[in-house]
Length: 237
Image (cartoon, rainbow, N blue to C red):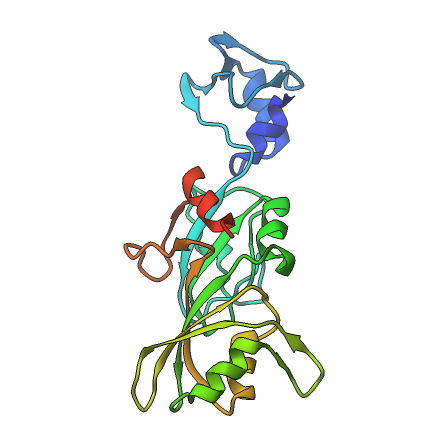
C-alpha cells in the first residue's frame, strides 16, 4: 500500500502538488468513490483509480526498450546534448528515468530505460552474469588466436582485468562482423578489448540484453514498453 498522491505523481509529469489540486477538485476516484484526501493509501494491484472517470493503469515502475541512434548520449541529463531520456515519448515518461547501463555516443542499439534502481543494479552487476550481446564491425580480420585471447579474458595495459567473453564471427570479410557477449560494462569495454587484440571497432551495435533481443520493429530513436515476460528474459542466466 502506498500514498495515492505519491503513486499518481510517479506515473507521469504531474507533481505531488498538482495531484493534490486535482484531487481537491474531485477529479480522482478509488473503486468508484471520489477521493479528495491525497494521503489515502491504495494497492496498485487491486484498487481501481480513475482520473476524470478514466481508469489509470498504475505501475510501480516502468521498463522501456529503446533502439538508441548514433549521436545520442546514454544519460538522464546532458549538457547541451540530446539524451536517451529526451527521446522517451510522453506516454512512457515519468520522473526518475535513467538508462540501465550506458552505450557510447556513437554506439547504437538496445538501451533499457527505467526508474527501478534495484532492477538496474541486478542486471548490471557482473556477479549475476547477465550477458549483453554486441555486433561489432571491425577494421580488419580477426584471427583465431585473437578470438581465444578474448574468450579467455584479458588484462589491459593499465591493469584493468576484463572477464572472458563469447566471440563469434558473423560475417567473414576484410572488415568482419563479429558477435561478442560480455557480462561487464566497463568504460569503452568492447572497443578496448578489440584494441588489445590489435583491431579497431568501426561500428558497434547492442542487439541483446540477457535473452531479450532488440525489437526489430523499432527504428533508431523509437521505444516501447517491455512486458513482464520479457523482463524475465533479460534476467535469465
